[in-house]
Image 1 (cartoon, helix red, strand yellow):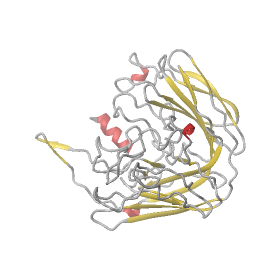
Image 2 (image 1 turned 180 degrees about the horizontal axis):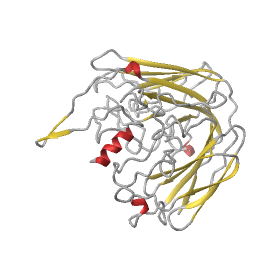
Image 3 (image 1 turned 90 degrees about the horizontal axis):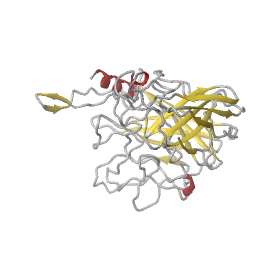
Image 4 (image 1 turned 45 degrees about the vertical axis):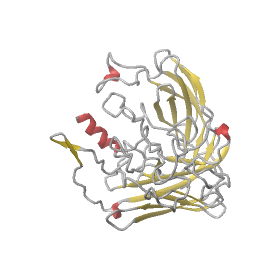
Amino acid sequence: MRAMKTFYRTINLVLVSALLVACSTNGVAKNPGVTQANLAANKLQFAVGTARIGQDSTVGVNFVATLRQPNGLTGVLASTPTITGPASFLVPAGATGAYTIAGANVDAGTNHMSGSPQVPRNNVGLFNSTFGTFSGVYSYGLGPFNSDQSIVNGGYYPGSPNASGGNGFTRSTYNGSSMVAAISGGDVIQPLPYFSVDPMEYIIGPPAVPFFNDGTYPTAFAGYSPGFTPVEIAPAAGPYTLSVNVAAQNAAPFTYTQTATLTVTAALPPMPAPAFAGDGAGGGTGTVNIPGGGVTETMVYIVDASASLFYAIGPITGTGSQPFALPDHLGPCAGSGCQNGAGAANSLKTGDIYFISAVGFDYPAFGAGPPGNTQQTPTITGASGQADITMSPVVQATY
């Protein structure tokens, strides 16, 4: 019980201001009392930058947002975001929407990307948008974690996203691993942060954050949001506005708004893919060749696709060839501290298929995010006043 309480205190940094977990009295489940929060006490932050997407050598736009309570926890359980760019920011005409319903994405051909409000299932005023009903703004970044009437296990979070249709929509095109098709399938936009390049998922797991694969967290929990949202749309200089609408049942709706300006459209230098060699004991070592040109920190992401495990290494500073290491024993085991004992499990097992990639930032990306940062308004821009990223290609290998 203590471990589960610890998890929920921690996951709040990623997702929610309060989790409504069913209580039990004499075997009868019931909900605890709920106190209405002061939405005006929350603060929204928004930053924009360029995104060099290494998988297909394009340059797009990166968005970073935080919506937090004064204690640093996520401000709301569900919201409807809209990002509006300058007139020359153009969502491609062929951009797919969030749902497999008849009709094109309402954002296609415009200068904005929007979400769909959660409405009764029989509502006839539905529209197919980029972010759908399931995407909101949380303590660090956008993500598919909006609460709804189908919510289970206390909430949605990385590893257990809201991937359903619902609210009158038919099946969602979001499949839990990527909002859109793989790069090789010719997608035109990638609107979600750590599901940006299929099958690579950018999630902050150990060793960058404290080990949690010990049975004290829900088994589906994959890690923490990295905060960045790369979109494959050519960067256009000018102001970008993030509007976040919060519907309310017993109060007036509330809208947060922030504007950020993209001044420099030149991207950071290309980031080469990391080189990694297994040590035969579950981990391994490697190097990443970090370019100059403004990159101040780099994260290496490793996904064990065979076991659905997510590792992150960093932040790595400096330029040129920099070493990194994946510890041997970060696989799931039982009991607090088990990764250091006889029950430790290998991070990667022989025969596992894994993916590896690196992302460079010109702002303190890792330091702004959970679980370590509990500031209401962490720093999300660099010296240039932007939030620029450079992403390496994703490399697939077998351990």
